[in-house]
Amino acid sequence: MQETQPPNQPTKETQPHLFSPLTLKNRTPTFQNRIWVSPMCQYSSTDGRIGDWHHAHLTSFITGLPGLVMVEATAVTPQGRISIACPDLRSDENANAFTPIINFAHKHNVKMGIQLAHAGRKASTMRPWDDHLIASPQEGGWQPISASPIAYPKYQTPHAISIAEIHQLIRDYQTAAKCAVNAGFDLIEFHAAHGYLIHQFYSPLTNQRTDDYGGSFENRIRLLLEITKAIREVIPQTMPLFVRISASDWVPGGWDISDSIQLAQKLKPFGIDLIDVSSGGNSPECNDTPIGITQDLIAQAGIGEFEI
Image (cartoon, rainbow, N blue to C red; front, top):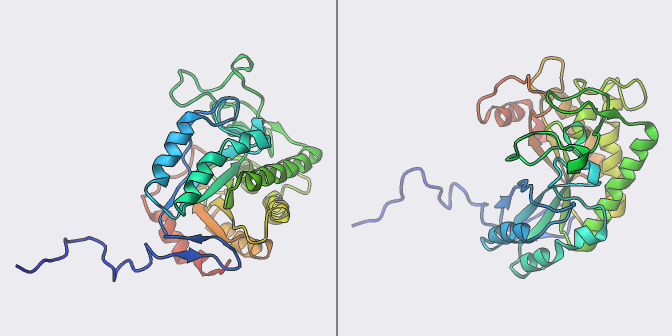
């Protein structure tokens, strides 16, 4: 009896590239396939440092031999953590806790990336399974920061950071990037989506500043571009640099897909190799969108036509 292909199963003809190697233009790492593991928050760090849980979590994916494993959102400062149990790269000591995992990955030709982040006004929370949301000072909490003193519902009112604090923040991204390089990571992605700090700057919903970092489109994306430039300056030119953005706030008057297209064009000369496109996260008032609609609209808008 002749064997037949099960219905709706991928074939070599329909997915010819999934298991083929990939090398990004002008960058060194070659990924052994196109299967990449996304970053997933674990809320299991102690004072910003990973431990046994992360070893088990990350190596379990590495043994599946994907092309890339991306570490969860890792803050550039302790105050940038989403929760009191999230990791940060405040020092080489914290970064070096990842090195045994990276070495294990490299033995199996798996590349390792890390997602640098700052939660901004959505920081200083407890873990998702705790019985309350906001961490008190006694529990290790702190006052969050943002572009403007506008609270996310049920969160603390953030401190609007000064120009001097913005400049320090950019240096914090550089320091964290250097720590990631020293630890052995193969690439860096920085998180500018889901209502976290950089998103809070480029979205008009959360940025009411009247200085060089607020108002016009060019001013609202200034922080994102300056962080991109700062990171690229301190990492090897052969190391890939990704950025995750929210394509739309899904709220009238907020950031939208046309803004994302303009941003994609602006990012090209700054050395970004891949734009990781998500959406939402900056307002609980966002319109419900069917699964897949974000990607469909982005494709229709032509955002994928820009070669980065």
